[in-house]
Length: 219
Image (cartoon, rainbow, N blue to C red; front, side):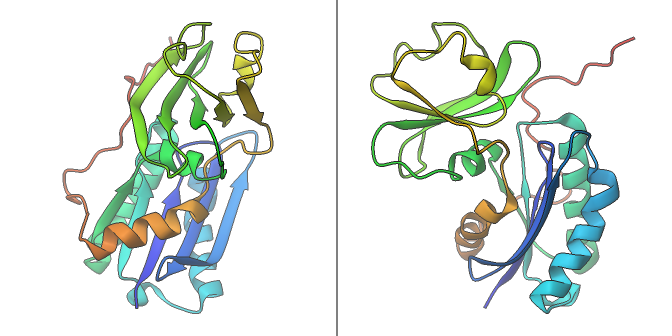
C-alpha cells in the first residue's frame, strides 16, 4: 500500500490530492483570479490528509508538478514538496505539467495539445497521443497559423492558453475543450504511483522546476 501526496501549483489552480495506490482519496483545490498558493497550499495539504484519514507519517512519497508554468507557483509547490521530503525522509517524484493537463481529457481520435498561457501571444505547449505519450517536446510557442502545420489530423486544444488561439487556429481540425482550463493534482494520482513503483524519483537536494523561460523582473 502506498500513500502519495500530489501537489500541483504550476498555474492559477492550487491543487492537492492524496492518493492511495494510484487512486485519489481526497482532493482540495482552488483556482482564483490571483495566485493564492502561498496562503492555501499548506492548509490544503493538512485538509487533504485529514480527509484521507492519514497523517504525515503515513505518506510514502511526495509528487510535484514540475512545470512549465508560473515561476512563482512552481517555486511555492516545489519548495513545499522538498520541505516535506526532507522532514519525513520521503522520495520526491516530478511530473510534467503539460502531461497532467493533457490527461484531463480523453479522446478516441486525433492528438492532444495542452496549452498553458505564457503571456502575450505565447503558450507552453507539447503534443500527446490518446495514450498520453509525448510526441513533440515542450516549447514556448508563439501562436501563429504555422506551429502545427506539420501535424496531420484533429488536434484537441486544452488549457488556459488555448483561448488566445481561436482567432488564428480556426479551422475544423482544431477542437477546443473550453471547460478544461488548468491541470489538477487529481491527474497526478496514477502517474505518481506508477513512477513510485519503479523508483522514478528525483534528487531532493538538486531538483529544480522546469521553467522553460527565464524569470523576468519588470522595472
